[in-house]
Length: 161
Image 1: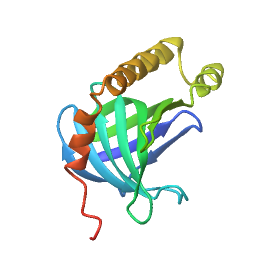
Image 2: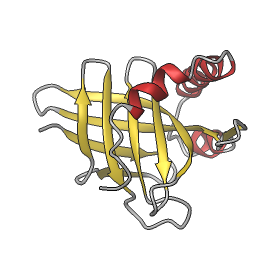
Image 3: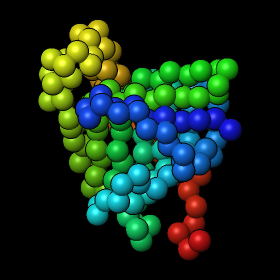
Image 4: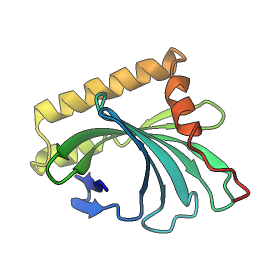
């Protein structure tokens, strides 16, 4: 079974996602379902699609009553160790939230400056993250985001488990 790690630049950490369940995996995608590592009031679980070749993690967040909260998209970099069958998904700071109303918010761009000043990300890393963000926003704004959400929703469990 593959090992999955979430690496964050701010705060600096690399955490094994021991309870995440891999529902599907191919060369360029992985779908997982999970409960939050730390309890949150807004959401408690979700299902995520890692689009490895594009550098996106698209997640559908749910509250404790299985109500849809919002879509949350992380810009990521993936390191895969074939010998260990392990993935390190590094959060590249920029995130996109898509509310049920359709409102799109880009968040955490201010963290680029702090990460750069601390030597946690290079200019090339920032430009790479911004390029991935632009491609994701293009998919969202041109109405093609549903091709990814449909993949996720195929793996959703009925809410009356």
